[in-house]
Image (cartoon, rainbow, N blue to C red):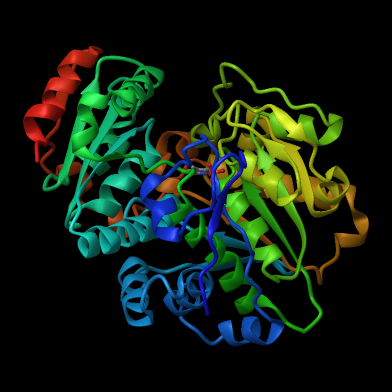
Length: 456
Ligand SMILES: *Cc1c(COP(=O)(O)O)cnc(C)c1O
C-alpha cells in the first residue's frame, strides 16, 4: 500500500508527500493540504472495528494515509501512546448517543488531533535530525491541547501566547503548570494581538533559522486523527448491515466536521451530518443562499471555542465537493451545492437555545452538557423536528460532546445548579505551581526573547 500524496486546495503548487505537508502546515500557495486520493474502507473492515480498542481503529484508519511513509510498528506505538484514555459513548434515549471526546489530558476533543500530530512530527524530526519551534496563539483550548500534546517530546520546543484577561484561570493552569520544553507567555493584550504577533514572527526572515512551525487546526496531521472516532463510534453502536448514522457536530473552524466528511467519503455509512454552529452562522447562510461572506469580527457566544467568523477548514470542505475557495474565502469554482445539501444539514443555535438545551437535557435525561456539546445536541433535535422520517426510535444518532462540563463550572452551576466533577486529568490542577512570562504587546520584546532562548 502506498500513501497518497497531498495537494493544495489553491491548486497552485505541486502535490507533496505526507511528511512535507505535515511539517509545512500550510502549502506555499497558502492553500490547505488534502489527499489526492481518498482511501476506501470496506463494510467488512468497518465491522471488524467493533471488536477493536480505539487505538487499533486509529491505527487501521491512519494506515490508509501513512503506510509506506511510516513503518507499521512505529505507527502502532504512536497511536497506543497517544490514545491512552476512554471514549465514552453515553446512551441518552432510544438510539441516541453522546460521544464524549473529553477524557484526554486537557479535557477537550482537541487532544485527539494534537497528541497524534505531536508524535507524527517528532517521528520525522528525529529521523531527519531536525528540530522545530512551535509558535501558537490561543484563546484557551488550542494552546493547552498543543502544550500538553507536545510536552516532553524530543526535538520540539513550544511557545504559547495567550491574552491574560481573556483566559479562565483553569484554562491558564492547563498550560502554565507544565514547564520543560513548553514556554507560556501571557500578553497584556487581546487574542487578536497574540495572533498578529505569531504571524509577524512567521513572516520574519531573521527568525528563519529557528524553524518555526504552527500547530493550528489546518495541519493535515490534525485532520487525519479526527476521522477515527466516527468509524469507532459507528462500529460500536451499529446493529445491522444496512444501517446509516446521523452525526451532529458542534463546529467552529470545521476541523472536526472535515474529519467526519472524510470518514463518509472513505466509506462510513452516514445518512446526514448536522453541522451545528453558534450565532456565527456564515456557513448556514452560505448553504441556504450559495453566497459566502465571513462574519467580522466574529460574535461572542458562550460556546467560545466556536466563535469563528471564517472557518479555516472551509476551503477543504469546498474542495471535497468539487469547488475552489481561497484562504480569504473567495470562491472561484462553486462546489456541488446539491450534494452538499444532501449530505450536510447546517444549523445555527443561539445562546438562549444553548442554555435552554443544557437545562432540558439535564431535566429530561440527566444528560450533562457544556455549551459546545449543547449546540450539537440542539442542532440534532432541530434536524429531527424538521425531518419526521428520520425522527424514529430506531434511527442511530450520535452527537459529539467536545469539552468536559467541568471546564465551564460557572455556566453549569447557574443553569442546573450542580458542580460537575473534575475529570482525572484536571484533578489537582488548582494547587500546581504555575510558571509563565508576562510581556507587553510589543513585537521587539517577543523577538528578542525567541532569539536569545532558542538559538541553534
Ligand atoms: C475547537 C473546539 C470546537 C470546534 O471545533 P472545530 O474543529 O474548530 O470546528 C468545538 N468545541 C470545543 C470545546 C473546541 O475546543
